[in-house]
Structures are given as structure tokens and as C-alpha cells.
Image (cartoon, rainbow, N blue to C red):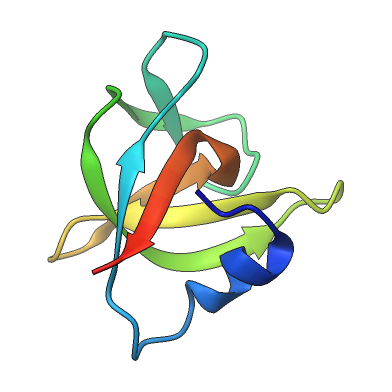
Length: 88
């Protein structure tokens, strides 16, 4: 998981392949949103689902959001604290 803002920003470095896993502590599927902290939900993901981070952004409260997807394209934004990301 990104423990700090620095960890989240380092995910944007292309020289480190990173895989993330959904770990939503609420017990419900993780909402994937059209924009960081946006209202439009484009899909949901279950815990344990592996995804690829594409970009990190911050909302007005300085919370990090991660643009995630698969190896072909991005799907949308998830709250960064609800995914665990490790270098491959």
C-alpha cells in the first residue's frame, strides 16, 4: 500500500513495474470512478483483484487517487488507501 504521499508519487516512475491489489476494508466492492473523488462510478472491483496503476492524482483534501486498469488500458480512479501496490 502507499504509506505516504512520496510512495504514491513514486508509482508514477516508469522504471519500476508495479502491480496493485484491491484491499477495500469496507467489505464491499471497490468503486472505480471516472475522475479522482468523482461521483460517477464506472465499475466496481472485488478484494484480491490485481490491477496496474497508471497515474496518481490528489484531491482537494490531498488524498491520493490512482488511475488503474489492465495491461491494455485504464479503467478509472480508485482511492489509493484501498489498494496495495508492490514493485514487480
